[in-house]
Length: 338
Image (tube, rainbow, N blue to C red; front, side):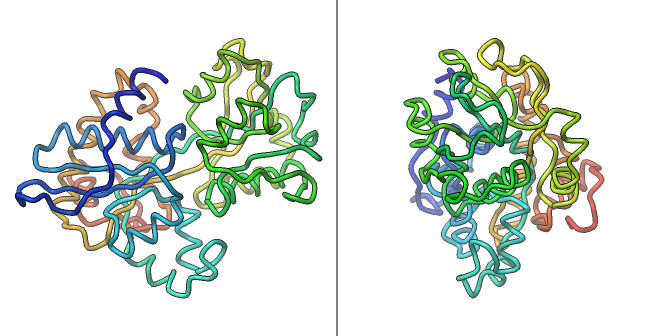
């Protein structure tokens, strides 16, 4: 584990109560997905920066479970903030997909407000270079991890793999069911053939794998992407999805691809309780962005987390406290985000 990740892990504490015993410090409960994901890195960085900047605010991060459940817990007031995504939020608003059995899902969606969006990064579809899997079509009959069952990442990866291959999980290939952490270990132990993980390249988890093994990334070439209308439609026209390009050589000699990999990218973000105090959310948003600028020197991936990206139309309105900060500094905000 890299030193920065170790320091982040050391700074994370177990979920705590909403208010300290003295009443002078505000303890906030934030949930994100497991270590090893870019969402974990981004959100724990946010918590660390805000905690350092604000003496009276303590964001406590729990990195277990799925964002789909965390969003329900925020809406119910059991959490203060969590990871979200335009795709999953739209499922929640419409009561579809993983929320189809939750009758009050649309009502719960009204209790969520956005703090900011950030790029999840490129979906890396990874196999070992000596596996014999050369193209996405070669996953037929293989064991494939798309993400934890029932999660938004699984749904997006499943759709993308279907676009690339026409295959269905547990019909054309075996869908490996595991958590993020157990899947990473399982892939290292070669318990399955293909591992799908998303992160801004160069993603630390892939850098770690590439140090000890030769890997191949599965996806499309530039020419193949431009000749695939379904792939273009998904990344350009589905809210919350975007084009991801993994540059050649970004992982060094440990990844054998000789040309850029065109793949899926995604938008995710931080959501907060709609009834969370406006002034508190304003101070948190301001503290984060002011600290993030200086933190870019040691965390270069933060350059991809921009103010313009943060307020894009992702289907969820900004929390009034966050909106106040963005308007105060003159960010151009889409009407749909207000």
